[in-house]
Every structure is written in C-alpha cells, then in structure tokens.
Image (cartoon, rainbow, N blue to C red; front, side):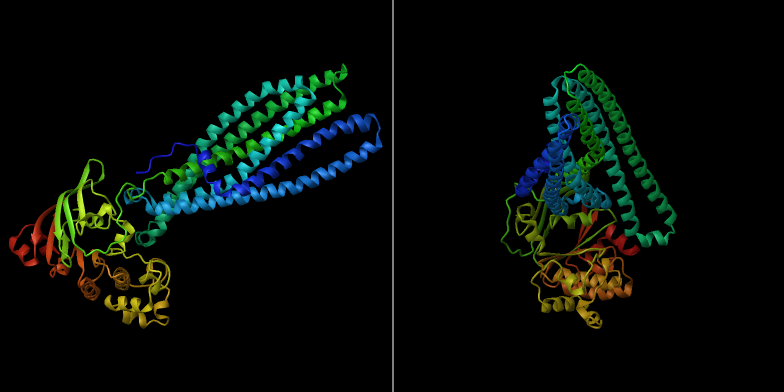
Length: 576
C-alpha cells in the first residue's frame, strides 16, 4: 500500500519541475533581470529632483529621459520571456500531473472508487486541475516576481536612509502576521469552494447519467432543487472567500498608508534639518509607494494561491490513494492460463467488520460451466469479482491453475478473462472499435468471427456502414439485446480461457433473451464459465449450480439434483 506523502503541496509541486528545469532556469534569469529593471525607476526620481530640478542640469535631463526609455524597453523584453518560459514550464507541470492523476485514478482500488461519487472524482481531474493550472501559470509567477521586486526595492531604501528603513522593518512583521492569518483563512475557504464545486459536478453528473430515470419519475424539479442547493452553497463559499480577501486587503492597505504618512513626516523633517536631500526623500517615498504594489498583488493573488493549494491538496489526496496492485507481490507476467479456478476458504468484506463472504470453497475444472444463484445481495457477483482480482480476499486464496491471483500481473490475467456484465456499457465509437476494444493489432477477420460467435454478425452487416457504424455514447443507439451481443463479442474476441457472465440477460425480455442465450452458449464452448443468473431457466445446462445465501454456499448440484433436494433452489425456481 502506498504511504501518504506528508510533504506540503508546494514541495510536491516542485518535484514535478525537475524535468523542466531548463525552462525554469531561463525564466528565473529573466525574472531577476525584469525585477532589477523594475527597481530602477524610483532611483531616477532622486536624480530628477536633485540633479535636474534643483541643479538645472539639461544634460542629466536628457540622460534620465533616455534611461527611462531603455529601462522600460528592456523590461518589456525580459518580462515577456519571463512570463513565457514560466508559463511554459508551469503548463508542462500541470500537463504531467493531469496525465499522472488520470492514470492513477484508473488503478485505484475498486473499493475506493465505488465508495466515492464519480462526479466528485471527475471534479478532481477537471475543476481542480484547472485551478492548479491558474496557480502555477499565474499566481506563483506573480508572487515570485513581486517578491523579488520587493526585496530589490527594500535594499535601495536601506541604502538611501537606514533609519527610516528601520521603521519599515518594524512594520513588516505586522503585515506578515496579517498575511499569514489571511492565508490560513483563505486556504480553508478554498477547500470549501472546491468541495462545493465538486458537489455541483457530482450532482449534475448523477442526474444526466440517470436522465431516463429522472424523466420517468418526473423528478426534474427535484433534481433542479438539488442542483440549486449545491450551487447556492458554492456561491456562499465564493462570497465568503472574496469577503476575507477584501477585508484583509483593505486593512493591510490602510495600515501601509498610515505607515507611509509617518515615514513622509519623518523624512520631511530630515529634509528640513538638512540630513536628507529632497531627491532622496522623493526617491524613498517613491520606493515605498512602489512597494505597496507588490503587497497589493500578493493580496490579490492570495485567494488564487490558497484556492490553488487547496486544489493541489485534493489532487495529491487522490494520488496518495493505494492502487490495486500490491507492490510486494511476486508478479507473473509471461503465462498462459488453462482455466482451473479454486476458492480456498475465502472470506471478504467491503467494510471492516461487515463480512460478505464466509469461508467460500469452490474447485472448478478447466472448461466446466458453473452457475451461481441466490437472492439479491447474497454475494454472487462478489465471488465473480474476486476471479479477475477486482478485490483481494481478507483471508483465504483465489487460485488460478494453482497460483494465487495476487501473484499475477493483473493486466495479463484480465486479458485472458472475458466478462459480460449485466449493464453492457459500450464506448463511444464504431462497432468494430467496441468489439476490438483494447486490442491494437486486431484484424477484421477476428472481429467478424467474434461477431459471428455472438450471433450479431447478420445485424451488423445489414447496417449501411456495417462495422464502421458509430453507436453513440454508452451504446444508446442500439437495443438491449444488440448491446448485449456486442458485449459478448467484445469478451470472447481475446479467446479468454475464463468467461464470467454476470446476469447477462436479466434486463432482456423473453424473446430477446432466447437470442442472446444462443450467443452465450456458443461463447461458453470450451471455456471455464461462471454464470450469475436470476432467471434460473437459463442455467439448466450448467455442469454445476452453486446456491449462495448470505455469503455461504448452502447447496450444490445439477439442476435436476437441486430440484429433487428441495430447499432454497427449488423455492427460487418456482417463483422465477
């Protein structure tokens, strides 16, 4: 299991910059040059007053005017390259994080995924990454640039008059304290904003995913109210964040202006008594005024900074989730399974203390057809999900050809297991893409053969574009039976040695079910098969039927043997 990383999000973000250090180095060089040029204009104020206005030196006036043009011209060039290179590096970092996040989310334990709202997870990869993008491409750049400018200006005012600068030094801790308090409050507000935004995304995603249910029960107004509540919470959180930023920005600015007035009074007194020249005072005041701008920028970017760091926290929270492959496992990558499956005293629980399977023992020979039946929630699908390693037993072992599933490379194992779920989700794309899904080097002959076995070839070839026909998102342009048979073709095109049919016909009417059952029988030929079914008429030909109740195998035998024995199977058969 991957341990949680306790580093701050800023430190973790910096780790992603290593591969882009060339761009960052160039950006830092131009940032230093730009900050240095930004510090020079107030110093020219001193020369304007002392050397031009008082001394009436025309040559110096020409020099200063030319210097201003050169300084701001160079500043425009260095600022462009600083922003360009820093944004390029920042966007590259965000691109890397987005790819890693997406890859990691696909490998997270199914327990974690099913315990989360899909919309919430989608919000991490869309909303949170977008906000992080603003952080690294804008907020951090502005903060770094203004911090360097502030330091440069501070060095100049110390050079002009260290006594007046000492007063500024006394003020800075108070400003730093205010910024720290504001930062903490904005970070918490940023978390609330992101959580509420994720709730909006999840609410909308759930409603549109189940749009047929919403329309069927005429609950559009109910879903609208749910969305409105989530939207109002997000609105309130945003206003709270803006309020915090506005209050602290105003307080800090008033405090700095009061400090400026004190400095102006003391500096004016020094000019009067001759210890400071008018030009030095003007330059000093100019630097103080210019220093207010970096502080104002920090306040303006503080909300973006803290919201971005809150988004980074949420992203790294996902990246810290353990993935399903145990890093200490002995991985078997080069293998070809025969299809023998054994459950050795398997116990399993989704949540601690709530055991779902209680000591399951099953031994299935290669090519055998096993049916799992029982009431809803008895544990049938959980047993099937343990075979491809979707979950790991809490105790006991699931063995394939005598080897623990935990020893296998799961990708290699799953490529040899065909699964036809109850809800056949097809991907947006063509029919051929869906049948050959995940197979890069699959020829058309294999696709046609799989379609033939799944009894869907005739229908496909009757279409104007045949196998190139686009079927729409989730396969909504096909009937239930057609989707089911394409799912069967998708499962068997890899020639799997193990086939899992999880209530593959439960949502179909009797006529369509008979058509699909023909395809299923053809698909099961020569393969170790596990059939989960509510309609017991579909499993009469199974070699063995296991009756599951409350996570235990309570009966086992053929259809005729179980009917003769009576018990739960006979009861279920009568009512179904």
